[in-house]
Length: 282
Image (cartoon, rainbow, N blue to C red; front, side):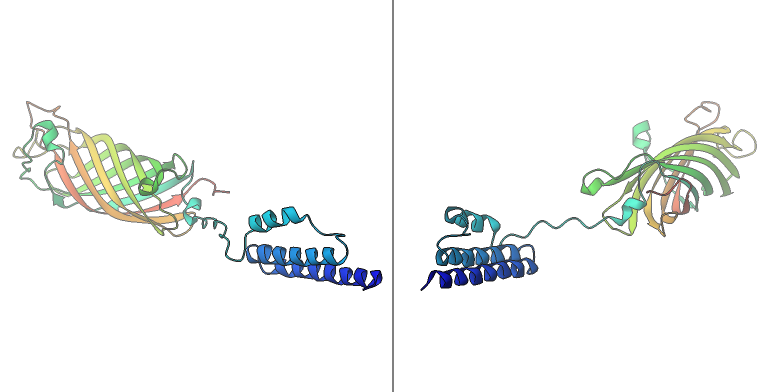
C-alpha cells in the first residue's frame, strides 16, 4: 500500500472517530460518555496504526481513561432532592394575624393534678367556655430539625375573650403568651402542630358573692392551654387550622383559705384562620 493510500485511510478513520464521539455525547451523560469515548478511542488507535501513529492517543492512558469514564452500566449520579413547597409557607420572621375560636364543653380533672398533690377529682359544677382568640404569630426561625421533629416554631401573643354560657360566671378576659411547633414534613399539604399557652386575666368570680361554693374564688386568675391540630395553607398568605384545645383557669390558690380555688378544666374542638402580614419570602 502506498504512503498516499495510508494517509487517506488515516483521514477517513479519524473522521469516523470524531463522528462516533459526537454520537456518544448525544446518547446521554452516562451512556454516551462511556460508549462514545471508548468507541472513539478504539477508532483513533486504529487510525494511528494506519497512519504510522500520527494523532493517536497515548495507549498507556487509554485503559485508565476508559475505566474511569464508566460504561453503559455505570452508576447514575445522585438525583437532587425535589423542592419543598412548604418552604414558602414556613420561614424566619414571618408574621401573621390569627383569629381562632373554640367550643369547650367537655369537663375533665386538672391534667397535672398529681403534680400538685391532687387526686384527679372533678368540680361538680360543669362549665362550657367559648374562647375567641385574636393573635399575632411570629415564626422565629426557618425549617430545621430531624425528620420526626422537622419544622419551625411560632411565638404567639393573644388577647383572649372567653364567653361562659354554662357556669356561675359569664365572661373571662386574658392576655396569653405561648409557643407552637409546626411539624413541617417535605411537601405535605397539611402541617401538624402542638402548642401551649399561658396567661393571666380577670373573670367575674361568683363564689364570694352569690354562688354555692363551686364558682371561682377571685376575679384575678391564670390560664394554661394545650392544643394540637393541623394547618392547611391555601397560598402563601392565607391558611386555616382545625384541632383540639384543653383550657385550665384557676387563681393558683391565691383565694384560699377564704375561698376555694375550684378551677375550670375543659376541652373541645378548635378552628382558626391565619393571614400573613409581613412580606412574602423572596
